[in-house]
Amino acid sequence: MEETYLLNVEGVRKKILHGGQGELPKLQDGSKITFHFQTLKDDFERTVIDDSREAGIPMEIIVGKMFKLEIWETLLSSMRTGEVAEFWCDAIVEEPSAYKRDTWAMSKEEKLAAVPVLHSEGNRLVLRKQFAQAAAKYQEAVICLRNLQAKEKPWEEGWLKLERLVTPLVLNYCQCQLELGEYYEVLEHTTELLQKHKDNAKAYFKRAKAHAAVWNEREAREDFLRVAHLDPSMAAAVKKELKQLGERMRKKHVEDRKRYQGLFQTPRGTVPTQPLSQAATWKMVAGGHICVRGAQGSCCAPNGVDTGTSVSQQPCRSSARVAQCWQLP
Image 1 (cartoon, rainbow, N blue to C red):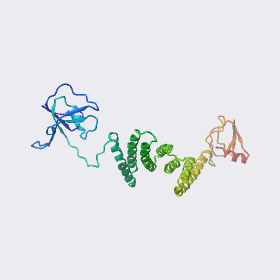
Image 2: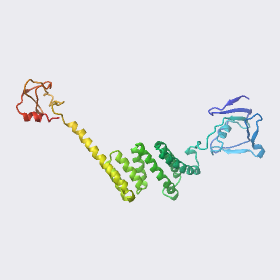
Image 3: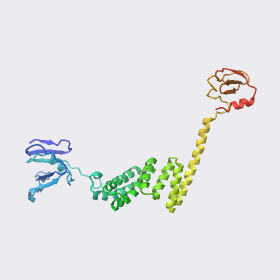
Image 4: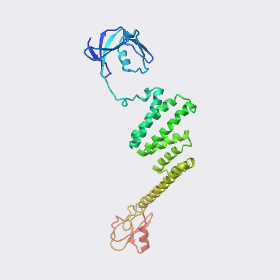
């Protein structure tokens, strides 16, 4: 019969050698499939590599149990009862380190085995300063452990054993986020960690650095002081961080004062940009000064300054009033 490609399956060709009976089976997870097979080498002689009939018993697989050749489920689901078919599958060759099973598809043993590997890969990436990639490794390891924790009763021995593996991974992840400037991400994860482990000095230290980065001075100081109390060996690091925090805050206060001072002061020799009231604005008058009287008071302008229009005006004789006028914002 004519050779065809399987729909929605890349690189697989099928040839029906003997038709089967009935409709295609609707296989569900847990369904058992019994069949015979031959594996042929792609050469001129079509050398038989494996044959279930030589063993004397048919092959059986359970759908959804991640059989080592996963494509077999796809091939068998395309066959009817009694059908004989030939399949040709394109080979995909990967290096041993290139293949990675998705976390959701791993067994408990595979997840536990993957955690130290991911942890080590993350550490290696940190040394290369590839913090985003390292954070992804740590996060994947945490997901493996959280999936396993979901099957344990909280705070019992099995859960606690997994939690002890989670904590350093979360801290490493937070360190990467600090390096990447994702400070609110750090605040979220360290706070969540401290809700479970209230005496974790490293979590307080990383949260303090995140607070300092987003100008939460009070919170940063509180967390740094907790670190020094919980772990005296970190006192020198805390002292250094508090000194840097104080210098940054003083510099920020100076910059803020300059910025706000400029908002409320008018330079000498300029005219206020806002009128005293809707009924009183400035006007240039030749010789001397003029005063403009309005609902909010009086003010004066020197000769030669174009100040717009005026409702009422008279020569101003008081230099004090002129000086006072120029202090208005």
